[in-house]
Length: 322
Image 1 (cartoon, one colour):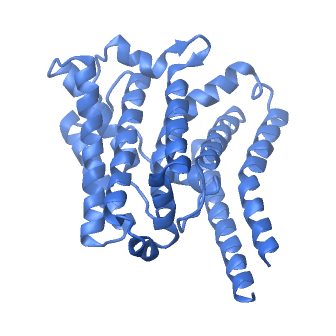
Image 2: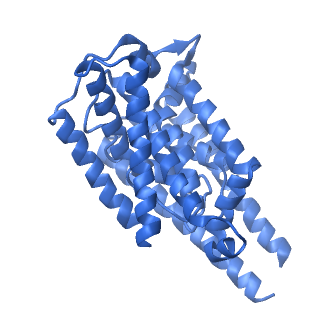
């Protein structure tokens, strides 16, 4: 029976990689320019924001939580940073630090509300999503804020050699977060909380502090992504990031992270982000409209959740049958 369970785990681990290969091969043969080096770099550049957000969301979902406010954080961070730069005439570094710090504080507040009220993370983060987006529109007056300095535009549009700067930042963050998740006690505690929160608490894990810190980390990374997005579009737009949270969640789930928490890894989640990026890029090359792309992305998310659920049920049956 143990071999059967292990085989299910193996299937789940390699399924994301196989899906990535399938999507890559499909669009390579179905389109003319998908495999071009320029397009491959473009996919990485497009997926950089998603990859940064996925790194934070992976921690949250492994712990058994959910953060629906990450998309709103993108818009608010961009608006605040642009406002500090153009209206308050603050320097580049102070503006970025303050804007990202505010995003982290919103994440911290989210975590505090979840643990103190003992309410579902979906409910709290859904409310915070609306609050944060509302602040973005209030501070900006509903219109984008321009006049972004060249050094910050470079963060979103620049290149180091042939590699886009956002891709470099994304890879550094994914590697650091992957190390923390898989090689530190903090990461082990996150898995323990997601696997069985009561058992983790009885084992001496400071559950509430860790959960609060996870949402603060998610907010912090959302802030970094928001600054990069601001540089990419050369403005702080309050509508930036609308709907991004669903792409992030989809990437994490199809990356093998269990929606029920306790299982998954950073590499799989990163592959999930690449799959979403390839799907979007390939479908665009094939002239598939955005609305149809949304339908396809939603179907992929449903299938990923169904796959995770079916494997979980099969595992439970094998354990019960001894």
